[in-house]
Length: 417
Image (tube, rainbow, N blue to C red; front, side):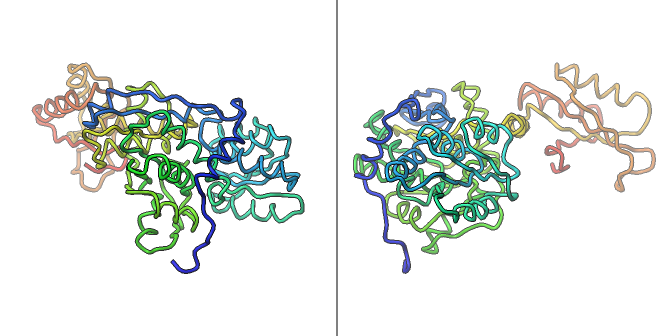
């Protein structure tokens, strides 16, 4: 890897960061809870959830931000700090700067959830909304940082940020020294870089697994190519890890200390958000649930003691609704049926009766006649039905078919079977 930056992060850096994070009103020790439900679902000997989503500001980001800004304050280097963020880093920077008596400006994309914008302002930062994605926000923040007396605080490409995130790795080891596998979501790589560096010192035999959302995955390709690759567009419900790129620094730490990187789909992430709600009684955002998506998916943890990191809990309620609809549809608890009928009075009543006989609730019905494949006098009725799950859904489909209707189970709103 020619041209790679020579700076790195050491365990000593992480230890010094722990000394700086001496205010538990800024960064607190978050709990670990065992999940027997996830153990039965994965075959793991023990699943211990590190609940960093319960951190002040709802994510781990305050650790790195406070470490970085405190060094600026001690050196008297800045009157103001500037950052770019889709939400979690924004709140960490805002809280850290306010506690340390430094002004802060955070540039967020116009698509950032309103709850995260409001929270960032609530922690004391000036917020500017620029661009449609993280890259647009970053470009503007860089321009602001060119002004005298202003220090830029990067979300991940900074040794002080990474060392601050690494304090979480020390905490995870102390919480469970016998852990065999830790599973960590990856956006820009600062979190996993810090945690992996801590485990390399404290427990080098522990397997370190990183997880990226498929629609924002850059690390697998970057590892193959030997240098950081970026995506022009990212597409995932896990906005907290939708950076679309890593850096030379974070990629070098991943190469050195991370054993495996896997990807998960938005469908798997949505399912995990719902599982955590139902089984662990925890509200976790998509980025935070990615680690659970990995162990519920293709990552083999059978017989192991595993610690998935729930790294963020700032789940916008609109996104929660989207995730729940997605997950419930996948489970067939929301069922969409398209039925071809002779367009005569009484057909809808007949079908409604069949569905009602199974104790299911019809949420919506759409009546379509202007479809090219239909014959004259035919129509489609598309039902959205609330069911108890796959068994009831399949029973409804069989009953409709047995009544001599042409019925298809369609996927959400796109008409696919």
